[in-house]
Amino acid sequence: MKLEKGLIHVYTGEGKGKTSAALGLAMRAAGRGLNVLVLQYFKPAAEPSGELAFQEALRTRAAVDGGEPGHLVFRRGGYRHPFFDKNADREALRVEIQEQTALAAAEMRAGHWDVVVLDEVNNALRDRLLLFEELEALLEARPPHVELVCTGRGAPKELLEAADYATEFTALKHPASRKIAARKGIEF
Image 1 (cartoon, rainbow, N blue to C red):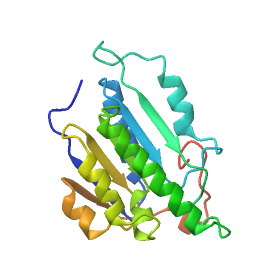
Image 2: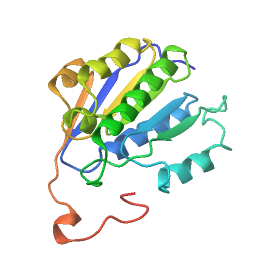
Image 3: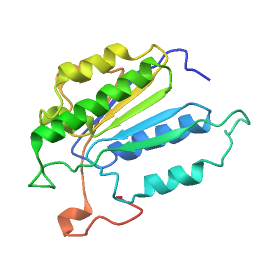
């Protein structure tokens, strides 16, 4: 199954829920037989997560409409954001982010994906670990049927202008302000 026309989504802002919204869309798409790549910037491959456990469980499921099941693939790098890793080599991190983004663009051009989620790419752009011009190459490589979702804080104006959907998440209340730590299965 291919979408007739793929659109661009941008989920940004200081509130919780950007990745969760993108993953909800990804699950829905895979359930309808679409092939989905979730490229998670700043989430190390070596760290266990609920998303990766879900991916393993999904492998045996058929599409909801009885058709061929879609594939939902999570891909991660070997790095954390410099905010969480003060010893991060920013130049090495920038090179890895460029390589991951270029690989996703090449795979889109080759027809591997119907939906691509670039989780936390907005943060990479905001912090100049990826330049908008480099992301623009991916935007230009995107076949017309591919749905693209960009998440993270600080989406640049150029990306917001290119988007068909732009949603800003606002934090009205968050447990962290009451010193309640992130919880396994809810926040990660």
